[in-house]
Length: 122
Image (cartoon, rainbow, N blue to C red):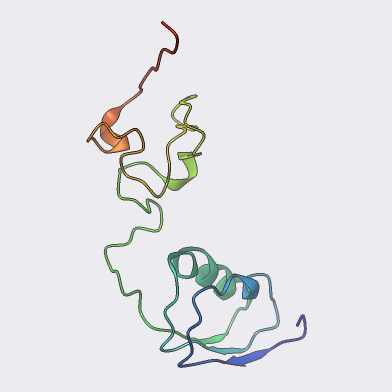
């Protein structure tokens, strides 16, 4: 599909459009009335648009206008620092889960919890 330049897929059940993200020959994409996922709105659509200047791109507006593409779970931490390792290294590698606002279950959002130290086998 590297030569694909037009895609009309309105009214389907398409959720993931990531395969289109690397294409550079698209002139028309119609995805109106599809239940696109968060990654579509936050990652794929911006990539498709930037990789295909002048594209005629149709899709539904984001159904969740409160969605912040830089902070999926709304915990106050940028997605890029939430590494999901469970280990706080520093403010650029928090170890928290970008899909869970309270990764450690302490009833505080990860952004409000601050730097935590866990001591095992004390």
